[in-house]
Image 1: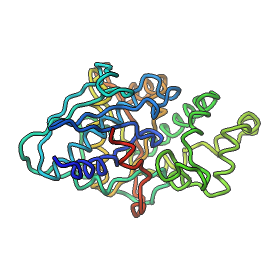
Image 2: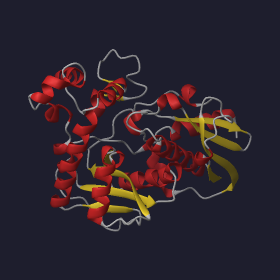
Image 3: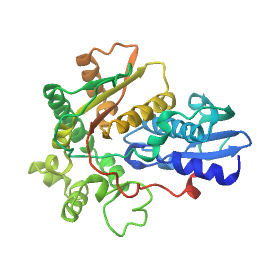
Image 4: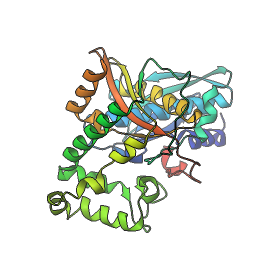
Length: 324
């Protein structure tokens, strides 16, 4: 593989999703091997203390890499290395996965969706969507309003409890790019466009999540500023993505990306509701209500709906930051 081809593959694979658009995955090429590491500086120690979301993002990046290789008819063998907790092979990074290049292969049909998928916080366009034929053993698709409303309420409760912690608010604010002058506005984190906030709402959000949280909470304004119930209720479907309890986050991340790409193929854009899986009580309530046994783990909850045209550009780190 030539250097320029490798750069092109990373450029396509960097479209993989990550919590708060932190983009923790890093790439290194060694001959016929591509190593993927996780940058601890792009992890969320308060919201994701066990690194589950970071591992999920690195697994999605690994699958995106395999798909980009597939589009060039290059086969790829994946090895999950997350459990080894290796911080020496890639100094400063946690080794997440190894992709070994193999013989020629046919392109994966989902490879073309890498350039089409995007996240959308909502609200979503009204109207029914055609989910005919879309079934997965690792996803329960919630379409009835009653269960969707219940998930919206559960999400609001869990989110307000999470944001009630000052450290959690500070971590969130550190990844928000609400000012048009923020130096990393076009590189990572979440900006006004991603959050669907007006300039005035962005100013209010910075104040409420910062020094005005306590008085805003007392006045009942935090739900209006930080809540997402309306967006959740406007979605066409909520996907409850679950995997075998024995699966690590990197392996689960590969399947997670494929679920999002399949949704994209159906014309749907998604937004993760990560607090529902980070909060143990919420995760257990959902598992009990939908009948997930102890052999399965709820990995992510994603709301999906029609969102119109894809943004002109995605906020992504430059390739120079990602290749180490």
